[in-house]
Image (cartoon, rainbow, N blue to C red; front, side, top):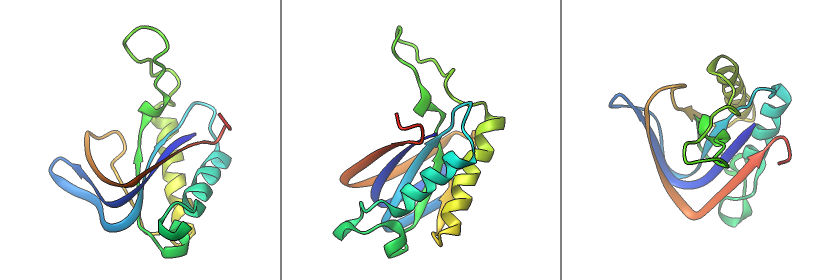
Length: 144
């Protein structure tokens, strides 16, 4: 499982003209992608890292300051662009595998007491991220 964590000072997700998630002030936006062999343990790793990374101001974590988090599914994190000019999506898990895993990351973040908004799985979304710093961290549960 892969995630890109961005420190933000405001973010929103809009689907079909409707805002489905948003926050103002300090928080995190997390883009999450799953691959074929990901399991619940991968979800726990990603959620734990997102919740506890000390990347907010004054070296605090989202849990430390009850920062809001928006999680957006992002199959393109598994794009393979080594050959040619057209990305291959073969590394990304199909929706039937990926959606419950992304949902599990959200559940585990909420279990840590965080206020978590989400995008809509598989939807055409407009994600606005007001990066802070900018700080962007790449997580990979496989250690890669």
